[in-house]
Picture 1 (cartoon, rainbow, N blue to C red):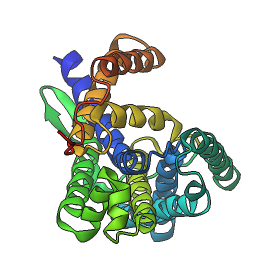
Picture 2 (spheres, rainbow, N blue to C red):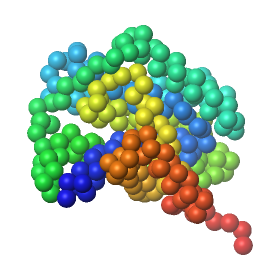
Picture 3 (spheres, helix red, strand yellow):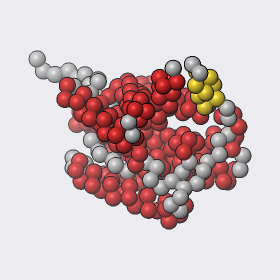
Picture 4 (spheres, rainbow, N blue to C red):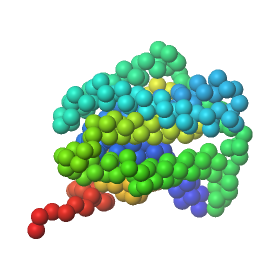
Length: 294
């Protein structure tokens, strides 16, 4: 039973982190077609925001709750600056954005090494996350459960914004038809910048969850950026429900394969399986439905 339960629960926690990271990519990649390889470094920025918040406040029980909005704003501002000064000049040039954001990611990693050191720093778990819950004989740490709850809250908040607010309708209009949205008076440039802010901020929130599990280190984001892109593509560009299913599927599958093979081989196999899946369904699990001419 442990061989079945342990990868399932740990994979669910991993999938929750991938979901938070992929939510931001689903917005930026799905809306603007920008391949932002620095998105993983926004995750890293959120983790260091949690560490610094804890150093300032001191009380771990309170600092983690404060770190969530702080990490969102810090990572969101990094994304906004990236869009404002670099990405906005490279729309419709996806290969250029790929190369440039790889360089930006390396710069952010080196900056983190210079400021915090290469070894990384631990983030203390709050007292209310100590302990575990028994699930079919496996002691599942509360931190894993907290990660899933955090991911679901982020998903619910984003879905509510997209569905019930005027800004959400502007995002959906821009995703479906940018030119038509502009003719209706929507400032797509402003929508792009706010979307980049929200998407990057969500990555920062995910960084807080990662910091609780593994601490902080400069290359933290590299372990999540490729799986997060796989999740977005497999789920369908801009499709939240597909992103949710793909995130938990990739996380759980990776943990099961890791228990049977090495960690690196598990990632190779997951990548191969996603590629095979995309050969069958190139548009991913779900696609945006639009009306076409008969």
